[in-house]
Amino acid sequence: MSTLRMFRKKPDDLGFFGKLGFYCLLILGALVSIFPFYWMFVVGTNDKGAVFHVPPLLTVGDQFFDNFKRVLEKSDFFQALGNSLFVSSMVTISVVFFCTLAGYAFAKYEFPGKNMLFVFVIATLIVPQQLGVLPTYVIMAKLHWIDSFKALIVPAMVNAFGIFWMRQYISAAVPTELIEAGRIDGGGHFRIFWKIAVPVITPAMATLGILNFMTVWNDFFWPLVVLKNKEHYTIQIALQQLFTTRDGLDYGMIMSATFTATLPLLVVFLLFSRWVIAGLTSGAIKS
Amino acid sequence: MAEPVLASPHAESKRPFLTEQRRSRFTAYTFISPFFILFSIFGLYPIFFTFYLSFFKWDALGPMKYVGFKNYDLITSDPTFWISFSNTLIMGLMGTVPQVFLALLLAVLLHSGMTRFKKTFRILYFMPNITSIVAVTLVFSTLFGNNGMINWLLGGIGVESMAFNSGWWGVKIAISTMVMWRWTGYNAILFLSGLQSIPMDLYESARIDGANRRQQLFSITLPLLKPFIIFVTLQSTIGALQLFTEPYVFLGQSGTGSTRQEGITMVTYLYSEAFRNGFFGTAAATAVLLFLVTILFSVLNMLISRSGSRETGGKKA
Image (cartoon, rainbow over all chains, first blue to last red; front, top):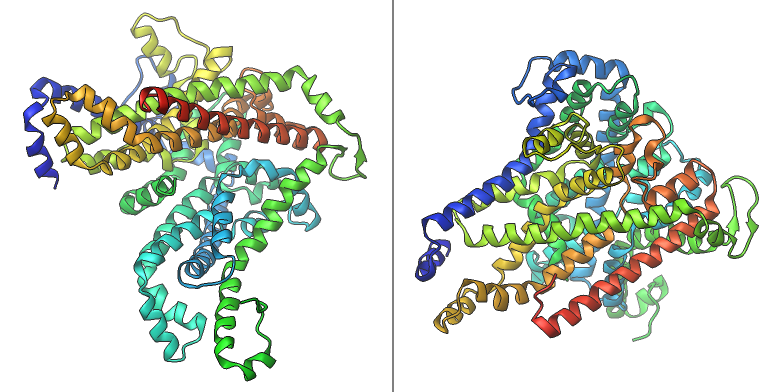
């Protein structure tokens, strides 16, 4: 298809210089996109002074472990990493399970009020999270969940985007006949879901899992509001705390921590980029 | 068909056919219930309670005291609130408008240029979006430092260096740049998927009619891309009004600096009213006003895009 299109375009081809211009702009854009990652690494592997070196230092140094040692002195970096891993995993497992269940019900069941309820689910997508932050905080205080991971996990256990995403996929990927056949064979509802539907839709579940993991991993506002003690900090709060330490900002240290905290997600993204992009841009399809 | 949702065991034994239907409905409601339960507790109830709370004086611990509209009076007579309001709008404009145009440009380039490296470019352009805002802010605060790379580059082209971490405009430029860096690629990919959905034969027949590249862009590509442009603009606008993490982290480097006037946003104002000063009532009033502003801008967005399509065929974003 793509080669065909190139062929068809021949009549008003851009010519050599036009193409060169296109390439240059695109490459410039790509450089701007990836430079900060490289810069993170450069600063993180050089000594303190490197960040404001004139002209800017662009070569990778060998101070990474020295820098990172100071990270470990100033924060419970690995504890925070572990906390984030725990919270993100718990939320992800729960989101994938409940959103798949709900998406399956919206895709394959008939029940009164179905369309209205689904529209409602979609409508909740536009409600900004910060709007309800005060009462949610009060609820957490009443439940004595302030400064506990429950405050991060429980409200996030199922979300509208996940339901939307799974419903779209299940409608297309799971043949209704298969479910009906299972029912005629006398399978229970949950059993059919688990044995027939789930095996077919694991790619969509995996995508939702990755997306959700990234969202929770990167979240800052809500953990900032509910977490009080250092040992409960998620990685994003821990990073921000490093930045607040006011004895002359030690950027070598900060960037070595930032790089280490960003790397896992970057690897996951690069491994699953096609799915992640499809998932993150799917929001536009509904509009 | 007005039978109750719950199938009673009594009915089950009597009319097995209906029971099957009821059971399947009951199953469906059970499957979707977790969302509705959680959303009513942590989504719906908080929204209503925020409105209610905005009429009370409360520190989240003691008894609540009804004060009528006093919270609204208090915040609207607080100059800091208005600074946070205008900052939010200014940074929203500075971050969103160039971003949408840049994203469009990148998408058009990606679509019409070389098809071969499209996948690679897509991945590269998307990378900023998966980075946490905290990480983005930390990296950019080194670039925007007084002796940082941006000032060095500015010096290279003969522009005086700027105080990006303390100046009135400097802070706003720095923060908008962070927002743009994180979202331009994402929006470009969205636009690209929109461009790919436009059938090629439209261009072909336009070419046969003698339309040149520019005419094709303005009378086919942009009008057909309009739903995507509206979606992106709306999403960016709503996002811009929620701006919090970038200014909070960027200006937080000296301790409590996040409420510094150069970069305070409405959400930062809300946050510090509630969680620094313990004024939950005024914070709730701020949330309500923020909500109204969000609705206002969403409606405005819709109106502009609608009238734009009538006059110019949807040329404007």
